[in-house]
Image (cartoon, rainbow, N blue to C red; front, side):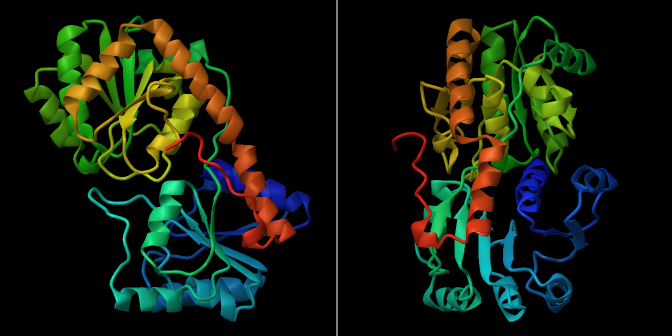
Length: 373
């Protein structure tokens, strides 16, 4: 997301616009240096996840200071007082950027009448919603909280070539055999990410393939519990828990990987980790849930399985682990998908086109789904 903000700010400042990015919480010095350029300003607006008075006052003050023409909010849900604060400060165009994943078992249907009435009141000033996937757009519209039109602008990532040096360095740092087939997962170590199913799949795979290794990268409330599960399953020898990796792309996580795993139970909107893995030519084994099928085509760029099905995960991993040509072919097709539809500069350009040209939402060309449903 930091890379996206950089790309978007470059698009906007080239056209003579200024950008103000408002963060909830401390803004790191690393990011300040990374984003620093003329026409880019950073503000701290805490407690954005609440509808509280304090957050509203902070945002109101920031908008009074800069008087923006375009206002966009994201990450905390559409049900906020932000649209009205922007409207009262004279913003001409007000957007909600919808990155919303959905809980396991979520069904896209209208909420109760009182909630819809409150939602419509809160979102009345909205010009439109910009969703990162068709799943997010459709499920969001089904709730009935806003009448604002919506379009899809897919997430994008920065593509680069695979690095043999990063591959070796990452494996050596994490004590992973250099010659094994590495299956990696980068996520919060929490149940909704499907870690338990992945560990049980790992047990099946490791019992049948001695040259396969699993990497679980990330931190979270259940990390210790998952480590204990691996011990109970007797697979510590074939599983590495690396802890958090601050920058997986630059530190070589994906370079070191042969198969990327995304076994989510959570209905993901459009996982950036999948796109990063595909951009480096990795086949993906993932849950058929949320917006993931818009990124991974079953049997073409990877495999999709029923969420929580450890046996299916294991069989698909084994199929790829035993067939290098299949891995390479799926990876190359995944790279092509990223090059065609998910490059970071494309995403930034589409956002900037809406803001700079002020195209009515009804006239923005529809983004086709990457694959047939």
